Length: 140
Image (cartoon, rainbow, N blue to C red):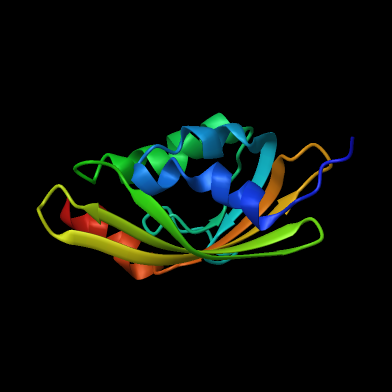
C-alpha cells in the first residue's frame, strides 16, 4: 500500500511533541533528512543554515539537544495549523518553554516538511525567530 500524507498523520506524529516528547517526531525523520533552519546562512549561535547532518541523530546533537539544555523542562511544540498538498506538509507551531534563567521561551515556527513514499520526512525547511534562539544561547 502506498503512503498517503494527511493532516491526521501529521497531527498524530506531533501529539507527543506538544507535551515535550519529540521522540515520535524524530523517529519519523528519514535517517538522511535534509534540514534547513531559518536561512541558508550558517550561524552556529542562532542555529540557522543547512546543517551538515549525516543523519537524524546529528540533528538532535547539533540543534535540538543544545536548545533543550537551555530550557528547564524541554520545548513543547504545539501545532496550530496543518495543511497538506501532495507529499508536502505545512505546519504552524507555537513553541513554549521556560529558559534556565526563568524567562519564557515563546517562539513561533513554520515547518515545510517533504515526505517520501514510506512516510518519512526527507526534507524540512524551518522558519522561526532566530534572534530569540540566539538570545537564549547568550543568556543561559
